[in-house]
Length: 444
Image (tube, rainbow, N blue to C red; front, side, top):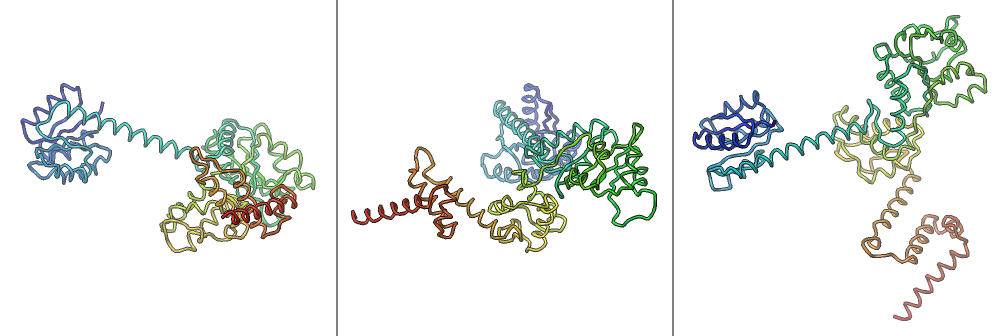
């Protein structure tokens, strides 16, 4: 049951409010001064506070911010004996939600309380929705809400429940290591260590495989093989010798290269690959993740700005066509580095403008695609498409022809090919349009 704190020093008014609350079945507590109100707000933790504006130890208006500091979610309803709305308005500005004029009528009190309860309920629902939305966009530190990523989250959850070896496919920079860490965190091996093995850059003269040391480190946990296509013959042989039924660790492997090509050229043992390839799944490249591109760009912007004590919060919407036009060969890693350069190389601001975008986003190819998107947006939002208005096909055709010619620098053959018509047809349509203009001029 929601709790109500009454702050009222007038005995008659206090008695009347108590009678109304008792009759309404509310859980309440009554105090007669500001100091007791502050103490009760901490101990009783009310949801609603009925606050008299004139108290023996100070003004009720001055008390509002102090009460809100104790419980910011409490709804304050001020009680005033003054007919003027000035004091009530001042209290509303200070943070109160409603006011009641003395003498307090029972039904008016009940309406104010029920309105306050409805507000609390709505506020709670909004907070829950915001939390749920935040969860939707992030899965154990992996940011994304696109359909391919939701499929990936399911694969991670399912694979974490078993102890089989897992093989993660994905281009460079897609987040294979983060994915492996997430599987480890959700698995029965989570109490053990997570050990990442990266092939040494220098050749070893030792007859003992370097990977054996990390196998021992990973006992009871997870051994993550960062790129199996780079494993030396010595490491591959050691792995095959140690992979058995009594292996007390989980092995997760990955590769940014095609393992079949690596096996074909003799750099990867076929028998080892198919032992490691028990549960395979793929991390989608960034270019195939739709609106996640916008989501990730904003996520990195806020994160990197905070790390560098800058104010960047948003991207101008005109920036995003540049992001979606880019192929992102470096995927998430490229995105993070690019956003970092935006934050560090531009004067501090709240919003990133298109002029702040570095190469390759600012190159000619991306710019052209942005112009095309702008044109499409203008056509889609044209007033002819609103309500019952219908744009004539002839006008749409004219827009398409003019745009194609402009995009192809006046090259009729190229424009015709892009439009899917013959050059002769395009010449004829241009001639017909010119003739119509002349006829209109004659009639005029």
